Amino acid sequence: MWKFVRFEVPSTGNKKYVAILQNETGLTKKVPFGDRRYQQYHDKIGVYQHLDHLDVVRRRSYRARHAGEEKKKFSAGWFAWNYLW
Image (cartoon, rainbow, N blue to C red):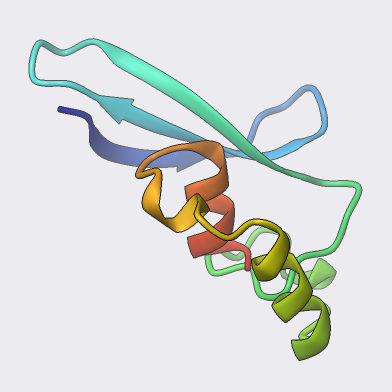
């Protein structure tokens, strides 16, 4: 079972964040999500708040396209759904 540890901002590539997960044996896993070249509805982590668009119609469209992501716990889509959209 994976447990969330923290968020990091990667220094290379185009991903906004990397979620660090850890299991009971101490093994860690990195889940990159978000793309720093694009806007999001509302950045709950805060580093990319300048890219918030707060457009409810765009948020509704994103959530319709990505329906089901909120059920795949700790996937890249789950983190984007919960922390960016």
